[in-house]
Length: 388
Figure 1: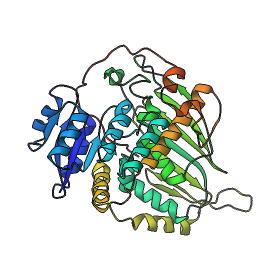
Figure 2: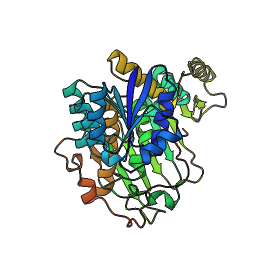
Figure 3: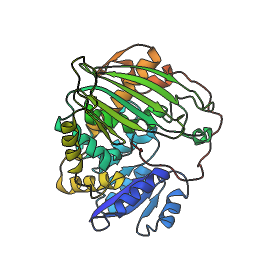
Figure 4: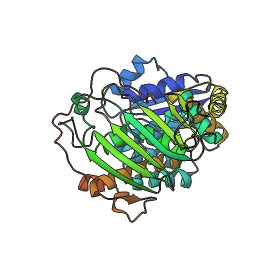
């Protein structure tokens, strides 16, 4: 029976708890930690975690639990600016770590986390729960089949909507505590999926703005172009999109595939214009690959947690590694650098790039507005994951 600790008992921690509870015969949540007095105890009572001990200090939790008996895995579900320090402390204590997205606000911090995992022989995974969705897994399988041909163009819409109250929460809405706006904290889902399906681009250009949230320093809208060898990908990150119509549309040389699901394969007439019939045989072949997808036993956070528990038991690499989390942060960093400096940024980023370092965004990023409110908690439930 693996023993689990959870650091941070805000809204996203509930997704972790629910995920671990799906595997109640494999693991037990033995510790909850939150610096806010009474908050961990409140979650313990609310979710019926009678066997969990509560702490207000993560270092105390790690030390105490290791004295009682080995703590196998810690979920870090705290604000982004705290991810690196908490993860490194757990890894140095000999505990495997599953850290919420985004991995950390800077590449410097990501590399410190990866180095700690390697030095102490521990596993590090970053939450990317959208890889554990049947629709996204299906799209990945279709693209990997090669039936769509080489990718020529992709349109990725990470479209969300949030009211101004969203940024009243104490850690949101500043470059220092949140690490960024919608590009880092919302589009990280779609950027990870883009990297998973298309690989890393060679260069990035971007524009940032705050269009509708006058109580936040950070961007609420960015539009970026990712440059591959011959292909381009457009990525829109937004929390100003009514209807939240999210999509990933991939144009291959031979067919278009997308989620929400759609397949089109054109053929040309002698003048080069599309025929009415299209390539029905190719469409059928793609639909057959999609139909052959075996539904995942567990999806979302539960899917990733199940994989991580197996990785801890088997001492193998998890499906989503620290390096995967770092690649998403590298792309976000390049988007921010391109938008702030108003130039194209080549990838990969080097360690001597100013934006590699912790604190550069705080120093250089535009403060679109001043944060005007700071509350400890917001009412209502959070929405986990993406629609497409």
